[in-house]
Image (cartoon, rainbow, N blue to C red; front, side, top):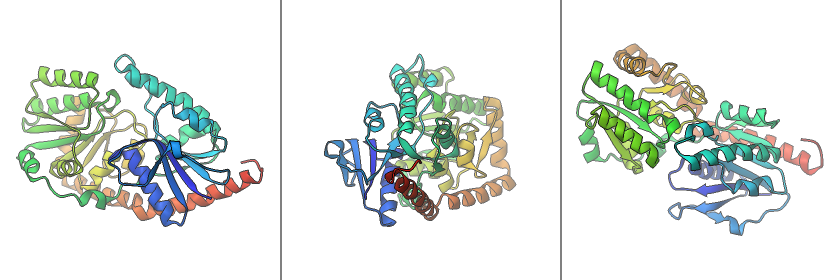
Length: 363
């Protein structure tokens, strides 16, 4: 028996792709015979990943599908002749792209339809959060379990400092960092509005650093907003950065923001914890689960409320010490050793269910 992981695409430095690689490593560590297949493979990834053109499996192999979007490849999955294990990374609700990114709107809409059919061909489901698992339960999947993304501190802390970048922005200004794809539901526009309020009413020495590729239509809106508010000196569009640059930006930041309205887990929250930064995040979807007691949840993200909250919190030493304790606790919960134990435990359940199915029993 082999454990076969299948992903539509494996991309260097992509969160879902890193999760597949980490899962493969852990499963091998636990003694399983594993293999990875993908429809699209980034040549920069240094791992043994096979093309779907080479796919082979038999009835005794267990297939894990890592689902991220509404790709046409999903059809192959829900037509696969054997029941599968699904890892659901969650799909953004299509409404966020309506009228501004029709391609993404269609992919997300299709993804939700495909999810229903894939769940129908699954006997077990993993989600990075209870929020994601609940969606699988609502679609009728009886056996689910929370499996957080593997986010290892040493992976980040091992990168050196990009000195020119650090010196450029480590200048006494308050640096707020927001990391993620530039798409409507991530709400970088609201982070800009918060920065503007902070500049106008609290301190002019404030800077928002936006990391991540931005969809062209959304980028046009964000740049127009910055121009209209005369924030050119206060908003930095860093775009896609290297791992060294990303870690440098985390190190020089004073706080990490997330105004996103939909997250299945939200890795940047954990990255902020790793670098010991206060995290401020809008309370939605899986964000409260991921953040725990390690950050500040915003129930109201209007610019005045959010900016004042950030300012007061960063001056409150007692609160900052409490957040530091919360970060240590949460990082321990998400530690590599704990994830290994969780996968080991869940795999026993999966093997039990798989054995019952193989013997013709009802799952």
